[in-house]
Every structure is written in structure tokens, then in C-alpha cells.
Amino acid sequence: MSHQSNLIASDIEQYLEAHKNKDLLRFITCGSVDDGKSTLIGRLLYDSKMIYEDQLQSIEKASKKVGTQGDQIDLALLVDGLQSEREQGITIDVAYRFFSTEKRKFIIADTPGHTQYTRNMATGASTADLAIILIDARYGVQEQTKRHSFIVNLLGIKNILIAVNKMDLVEFSEARYNEIKSDYIEFAKDLGIIDPIFVPLSALNGDNVVNHSEHTPWYTGGSLMNILETIDITPKEIEQAFRFPVQYVNRPNLNFRGFAGTIASGHIQVGDEITVLPSQKTTRVASIVEPSVEKDSTIQSAFATMAVTLTTEDEIDISRGDLLVKTNEQAPAMTDSIQATLVWMHESPAQLGKEYVIKHTSHKVKGHIESIKHIIDVNTLEKKPGETLQLNDIAVCNLTLNRAIPVDAYDINKITGSFIIIDRYTHATVGAGMITQANQSNQNGTTSVKRDYSEAEKSLNALVLKHYPEWGAKSIDEVLGG
Image 1: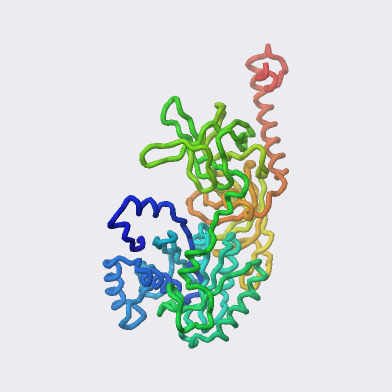
Image 2 (image 1 turned 45 degrees about the vertical axis):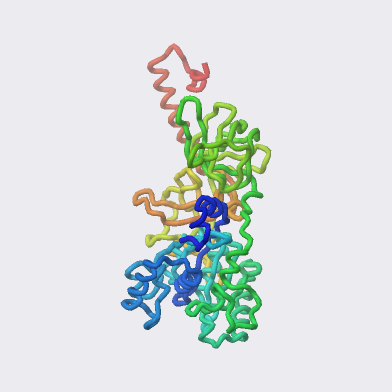
């Protein structure tokens, strides 16, 4: 839902134009069970007047049946929409909500707190710009707080906001707030989390959620909403090297052939020389087409997160799954062996050597987990040996692919540095990976391919000699070359 605005009644076109040009902030809420994640989102929307009347009536009706706040409205039901969630009073799946204010648009992902739903939390965090980690003021930093902080940091979210919730149950104690703040900073420094933001609040009563609370005169920072509206979310991808995974070859007629996709990082302009990976062919950008509701228009330049269609000066083979990069910039590594941090997301354990489908950017390759370097205990950060991965395990592994692909490290580029693992037979997504480094090419795999080709070549040569004796003992390469 959008915010209340007089422009809606007076000049709807001006309102829509202003609304379209606002920044979009994607954020998640996470933390331990019963820390108040869903209640916080409900309060955020309620106090900001972002709930439709029919939604409010529905929540009021549901609160009388399955609510946990007595005669008061249970705002957590706004995002806990599954029947099992409402019956148990917990979050199971990721719930998304959209709203906007005068300053910014938002997409919230409410993620579950239970350990067995860690994979759901990782899914919600994968596209977020900011993470709100809730801590119950009564219990302080818990194991799930550490687990979610580790995953948030692993997925590269730099803006981390620690919401110390239920301050009303500790009488808004400044000493208790400072104790929790100190404990979290001590833990977070080992993860490399820099300058987390802390806010004391009560989601149930609305203290410091949208407006500053009179119960915390010792807190001089902004309310949660104020921080969300003003925090810097300038995309860092624009400053990185140009990466453009081709998603679709656009050929509406004989006179146009373009390559559509979303710019993962960097910027491009007409005339720039680009290289196609993996073919290594080079050409120049002839035009950049930006899709429009009325009519597609050409532009001179484009940058990260824009969906565009590029045309080239030369007719070269470019297909879905190819990666376009600038010729004069640092190229990604071409390799068939990678080291990555895996989050295992399926009840069936990972099997070393089993062939999976690896989906990387817009293409798929076959590959397998070669070895497990270590499994990470996210509560203690201890590295443990292991032979397999169970549901929700996080481990550093080596993977071997059946062909070389262009990759970057995840901390350099989230798009070209990440992938998902798919079971070949069930088509279920069983894992997600963040590339830490490109290994040297797998020599065993290369040797195997050469040996197979050599055997095939011998068979072909025998057939050629039998049916075409006039060619003598020429090899297949010599015949084809002639």
C-alpha cells in the first residue's frame, strides 16, 4: 500500500511520477522465535497508516479467534497469513509486504526464527539491502541471533540494524539496553560486522517504531522509520566492473537483433568495446534500448540494476547464458573448479560426487561437490570436518563443473559470484552457494575428456579407412582441414 498523499486527489499523474522515482529499500526482519518480528512489521504499517480498512477489519476478526493480545488487535497477523502460523503464533514461511512513504518505497521480508527454517531466512536475505535483527530485551543475544547475523553477513548485507525489542518488559532500562549492545558488538566483531545501528523499542506499544518514545529519553537516535527512510542505499554495484548476463535474444523482426538482460554491475554506453564470455569474441555496443510502457526508446548509457537490450556493431554469436563484459576492465575468472560457501536447503543430505545442476546467472551447467573443506558452527564460528551436508548446514566446499564458466568472488559481485544447486531428477533447489575463489582447472576432468575424444577419434579413423581407402591414413583433423 502507498502512503496518504493529497496529490492522489489533485494530480494523479504527478503523484505516480514522483512515486516511480523514489528509492526502493528491501529489508528483512530476523531473530529468535517470539522476538516480535511480525508484530514489529504490523506496528510499522499500522502507525504509518499503511493498512487498508478491509485488511484491518480482517485482522481484528482473526485476533478474536487466534490472537495473542487478549482484547487488543494482534498486528502480527498482518504478515503471519498461513493457518499454521496463526494457530502456533510463529512465522514459518517468508512473508513479503510493500509500502511507501513520502521519502522512499519499501519491500519487507518477514523471515522465520526457528532453526529448522533457516533456509527460508536465507532466501529472504538474498535480495535485501538492510537487515533488522530483533533481540528480546529480556533474553539478550541468543543462538539464533548469532546464526542470523552470520547468514546476513555471509550474504553481504552491510546495513545491519539491531532492534532491541520488548523494552517495556524491562522497564525501558538503559543499563539493560547498553548490556545487550555491548554483548552484540563483542560477538559481531569476529564476523566483521562494522557499525551496526541499535534502536531500543517496543513493537507491541509502538515505542520508537515510527515516533520517538517518551519512555527512552536517554536514547538520542532516530526512530526505526526515520532510519529506514534516511539510511544510504546507493547501489555499490555501479562502481564495479561491467557484468551483463544475457537472458534473452530479442529478434522481433529481420532488422533487429538485441540481447536483453539486467545489468548486474557497472555501467555501459554506446561505443564501448565488449567481450562475450565464454567465446572471447569482441565487438562494440551499437545501441542501448530501454523498455517503456508506451514505446521502447534508445539511450546513450545504462548502469547496474537497469533492464535493457543491447545491440552490437558486429554479427557475432551471442546466446542466453553468455556474459558480456567490458574489454578494458578486469575480466572474471574462467574455471571449471570453484570454492564456495554452501547453505544446504533440502532434507536430503548432500552427496559428494553426485551430479547436480548448477544454475549460475542465466545459464546452467552440471557439476558435483568434490570435497567439504569444513562445516561452520554458526553459534561458535568453529570449523568442523564433515563428509556430508544436512539441512541448514553451512560449509566451505570445492565444486567441479563439467565446463568452465566466468565467475567472480561473491564479495566482489553478488550476481556472478552466486549460484543455486538443483537436483537433476526432482528439480528441487537443494542448496545455494557464494563463491569465495576460482580454483585451478580440474586436470582430472580435462584428461578424461581428452582420453574419451582420443578413443572416439580412433574409431572414426577406422571407419574412414574402411569406407574411403583412397584417403589413406589421414587423420580426421587432416580430412576436415582439407
